[in-house]
Figure (spheres, rainbow, N blue to C red):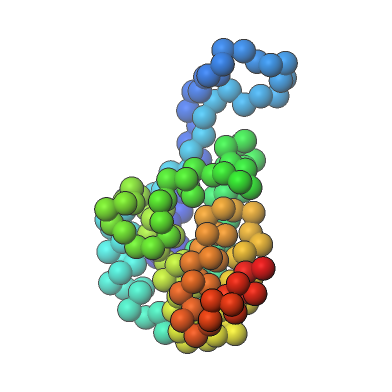
Length: 171
């Protein structure tokens, strides 16, 4: 159910060239695209907080895997349309912090997906240290900036590691 609720559709909108010139680019994309979720934030958040998060002991690995896959697919789609780069994407730019902060976030369905990835990574850090380290390493190599930020958050949340150990894992 969660998977169906975070499904997205590509929305193509008429765009324009800010500079008013084509700079000789024949294949320049002159319209705007967005990925739109099929449900709103409130309903998705209710499902997540009441019916998924309480069962993280059994679900954290599956939720993390699924959420990261969706975030990376989202990035790759936007990158294919020229709307994201390895050093910038709208999703990461629009999210001030990975930590839960209702006041600072847009309250978009994307926030629930990011929260699910973050919470499941933190849960893994509490229950399976080796799997947590493996996930942190995998996420740190992602092309999607938001996923790399999740890796840093997951590493920071590991209270069993000293600052030096965290730095060695990060580097």
